Amino acid sequence: MNSILDTIGSFIVAGIIMLLIIASSLNMNSASVQAIENSLVQTNAAVNSIIFDYDLYKIGYRVPSNKITLADSNRIKYKTDFDNNSTIDSIEYKIGLTDDLYYTTNPHDRIIYKKINNDSYVNMGVVSKFIFSYYDSVGNQLSYQSLSNQSNRNLIRMLKILATFESSDSNYSFDQAINWTKLIRPKNLK
Image (cartoon, rainbow, N blue to C red; front, top):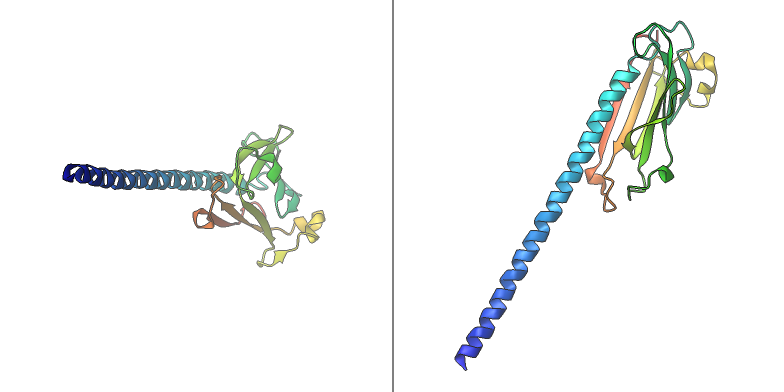
């Protein structure tokens, strides 16, 4: 009888040990997935910030007038000699709709589109929030409504970008988000 009780007891102890091992393994897998998601969000933020820095500092390069042709909260179009070939290029950044993304379950995700001249829009990355703000020479913010007029767009001397990058996972959380803000003063907007 004692051997039966010993066998049953050993099965119970073995079952508890197996449950502990399975729980530990699941916890490690979850932590690994979260670390990978964080790494992807950081990479997306770093790559896009480098591109925006490079592109937006060139606003108005070799352009005599009307350097910014469209300025809105989530869209900008400007002129520059982008590839330094003495030909004026038109560059546009805009944010797509949340419906444009079918491969992410984060309801806030949107595509950043870039267009050079008459080429097609190119997917530059995914953001959850992307807002442009525009400022005059003394740092006063210009209203979006006033920027529908070219003479007011000619007053722009600085622009600020606010971008939020989040995980594309359906279990996204705001503690995994990266907020990036940059005030850019293109030297050709004088």
